[in-house]
Length: 216
Image 1: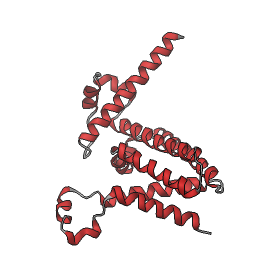
Image 2: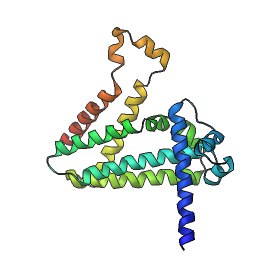
Image 3: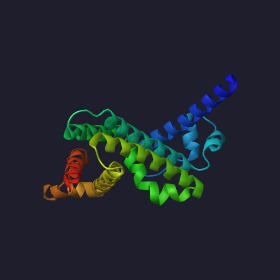
Image 4: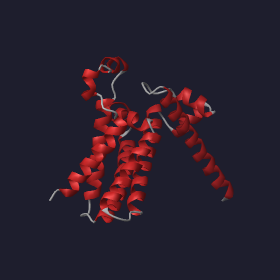
């Protein structure tokens, strides 16, 4: 029994090392996915070992995206589960945590932008189903915590969180200009087109939640 547990711990450690190496390489150059060979080298593992855990490099990054989305939703649930005080105070705390999580995980939005067009296209139907089910369950748990904290009808919190993420995704993609365009838009005449994502996001989320919760 002890040997089996140690073997399982070793497998989890190797998987974590693969994901950590993939994250580091992607952060260094997020314009393309690093190869499985480069990930293996960065993790200090043989290339064949990586393929024992993931069949393709896309699977590696879907696993990384799944973990990060799951962690974001788990932290969101924890914020609302620990909620005390008035609704606006709770929302301000949630937005602070949400934005701080994105600050600490800059790869999340870039991976998310590749999800539909690249990552998910290379999954089997069963793998895609598992990925989406895990996300659905995490969203449902976080949404239920929102419902309890704010006294909302069942399911309303999940909808608010999903729309918040869609708002975040859209805002990020709208402002993620390529280098050449950033140079052009540096001209003050284009200031309206280049607000800072980091300062714009909390304002947009606050305005959305205030409006959504005030609606009849």
